[in-house]
Image 1 (tube, one colour):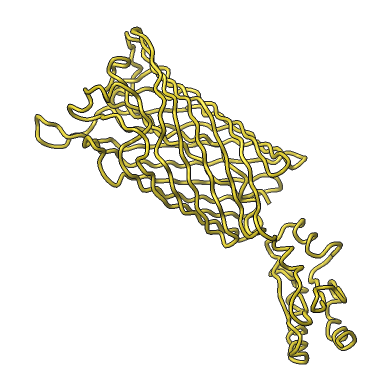
Image 2 (cartoon, helix red, strand yellow):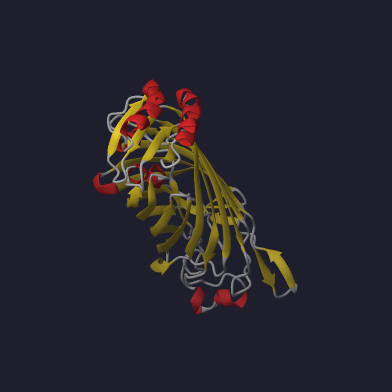
Length: 420
């Protein structure tokens, strides 16, 4: 049951410092996904809550620039390198509803022939509501919606403010609130292989303090994840496309808003990765970002190779479905473990209905195991070999009789025999 994965996205934007990279005034590479994700979906529905936490660190290079789609031979030999760190925590209820918080930070190094500088800074806090659904053991669906809050320091990118001392540094903050929405689907096509499709959109809800107006962003990806024998190592390969619309600024001379010529574009990249599940709910991951194609507007830094590593945990909280099914109940109880795909279970339903009419003092409880894993079923009814499984329990929860398969049709006779 490894179909579900949370998505971790580190969102950084860059403004070049005039003294270090004189090529542009508002270069803004697209969002940088780490492609590091947590296997939290593996526990979806099995426990009351699932708590996930992870820390991701990485490095992304911007080694050169392009002007109007052509390589720019910069006499200043300017380049930028980003050191990235992101901390994320999330909680998911068994119903599939949850929430998450993520805070990125960056160490941005810029250099050219005049020297080098390094600017650290926090990014913008991302808060999301999440929903997860697992219609079958092979299909996993997810939807997220939330906001990116302007908690990071913002360097002015527009007008006279862009020339002030405050603009002489590189910052990951974007100066305004963004709305975020994401959808994801994963399908286990064959044993051990899962294919995923994701789509995310971001749109600014206002202008930055200096009047700079970001363009909306769209990110789409397709990936495959293969679970190696041994059940603990996953290898993945994905392709992702990121598009950002052109931003705009107020032109004080024209008295109107004009496009910012050096923002926006399309980047397509490959995302290879490996995930290792460790004991006690821990997991470790390593991934890379390899640009395949870039089409950037105006004069911008090209994305280079990126490498990311993550360490996290997935902790179930509360009783599991199997433990809940074993809990003591008030009075004598008949517990029916069945599944929608089980033909023998459907044949048993009229028998149970008749037994319920004959024994109104007995509680009849149906437990649907259609989406349970084999481990969960084994925990609930150890040693069971066939569905349906029907148990007759005393008020203290002890099992008087367990009937499996065709033998479950004898439940009426057992009630006649065993009830006091």
